[in-house]
Image 1 (cartoon, rainbow, N blue to C red):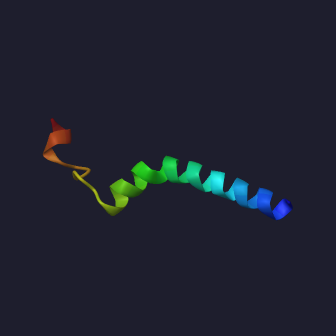
Image 2: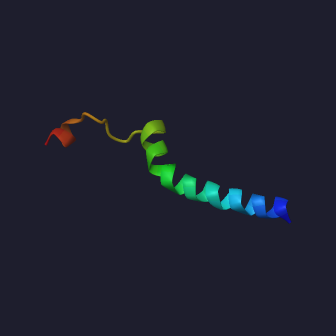
Length: 42
């Protein structure tokens, strides 16, 4: 039971962290627009 509960907790935690870090990972791995781009200067 403890192992199953641990797996459920880890799975839920992984989903939460994946959701929270998804936008940051997207910006780091595949940046759509540069950080110091002309659009942001406007």
